[in-house]
Amino acid sequence: MRLIAILVTAVMVAAAPVAAQAADPVVAGFAWGNQPANPAYFPATGYEFNSAGLPIQILRPAVGTYQVKFFGLAAPGGVAHVSAYLSNSLCTVASWAPMGGDQVVNVRCYNNAGALIDSRFVVNFTNRKPAGVNFGYLWNDNPVPGVAGHTPSPAYSYDSAGLPITVFRSAVGSYQVDLGAFKTDPGWAAGYLRITPYASAARHCQALDPALVADPSLIEVRCYDDTGFGVDTRFTLTYARKTPMLGGSGARTTATVDLSGALPVMRGWTNSYGGAPTATEIVPGTYEVVFPNAGHAKGHAMASIMGTPPMYCTIQSWWQNMGDEHLLVSCYDGNVGVPNPAVLLNVSYIA
Image (cartoon, rainbow, N blue to C red; front, side, top):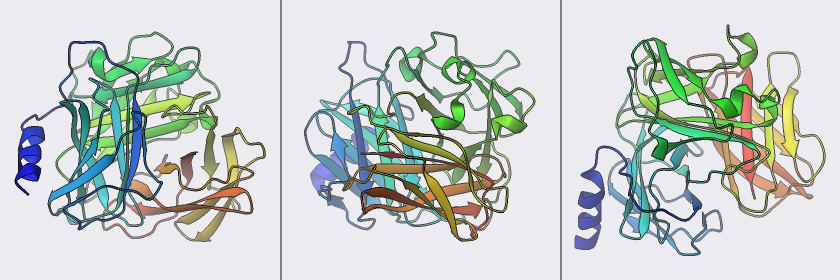
């Protein structure tokens, strides 16, 4: 336990991720935190990946407080995301940083009253910078940008279009992200768009439907506290199309589902395994998305809501059946966390 205490202290000293000066390898990793009350364990379910080929450890020094340690994955900068799994918890990235030769992502999970709570979660990290595709990410480390906007640190941002990245703020909790990889891509609905609060408090962030905003070239971000009121906060954002968010074989499964009509409609999708995905409403607020021929054991999945603020969605489970990959997603209102029908949903699965 003394070793765990030392690790906790070392990582939590930094209020923000710290970039190293030396060049780094390209790395990626993901994990499923499936033992919410376990003080220290090594996930070994197959739902984890470390591009360094080494173990992953999850520590829980306190209720709702987790450290995900990717051994051998140390790299400055990059981007991290987290989401609750199988619950309506609000999980945030509190910080991430290399520690020795390892990469540590600090996670916090809260209930809808804003109190820390033990929760399952899915988490990922990468510092990839692929060219010739539509890929970009950023850590917005300034929750209140000035009129001219804020340019995220180059160590924690990337744009495959090679354009400057700027974050603007139009009102409390309302941001506009100018990301070239997104605004130069008319096929955004076939891509992946993920926003995660970077905070040590209960927060949730989402994108608005680009088809319904004044300037669809900008990513409209809205962030809320646990009561559903707009709140200024730092956040991370990733957009990816024509490339998997976390690297790998290059196979991709992503879909944007329009749920505004009587039946779900695919606004856009990508399935490297062939076949258009389908979506079904199981009960109001819970949806099953199926990618034909994409069935794999294990892997990694995440879900995001677009539009209908304030709301958030979490991945409930994913599994293969008859060669297809199934994703189950539940969406909740932004105040008390009760199930709530979604209008536009973005999901992604990585084998």
